[in-house]
Length: 150
Ligand code: ATP
Ligand code: MG
Image (cartoon, rainbow, N blue to C red):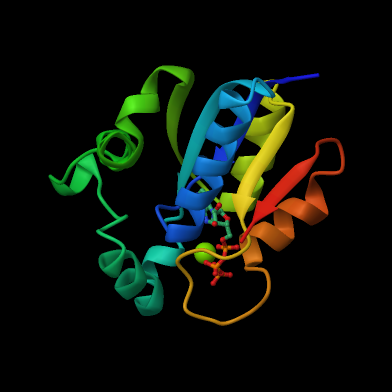
């Protein structure tokens, strides 16, 4: 059995990079076919100074065509290219806006993904076993298997 389309939730954190690496390993082992990398820009969280600092430390998540900065998709393209350029052909990238967990779950369904891979933690500063996005995806995605990497 092999997964046809694996959604990787990507917030550019080290954890998310590990999640993408795990999905790529599945593909390399013949257990997965394609990867859809989804990065969600949460405009509400932008108001949160801890998020801004964390994203700056992670190399700048917040970028927008409207603010004369790079569009979200080119930003994502660059990060993925830098880390996983040699594996790029099995991946599709999507940069979306909204509440991350909600967008991840809905996109997985809309794009007919059959597995979600995500990190247990992300860019957030608060120490916990699971972050709010991974918790909400696990809670709200009863239809699909979710692989949480550490
Ligand atoms: P919190 O955001 O609650 O402060 P956190 O940042 O440590 O905590 P989460 O945000 O739950 O933890 O991140 C867990 C995983 O969820 C990440 O490794 C990533 O795979 C995914 N994720 C989080 N935010 C996004 C996002 N905006 N877009 C895409 N994937 C995301
Ligand atoms: Mg987070």
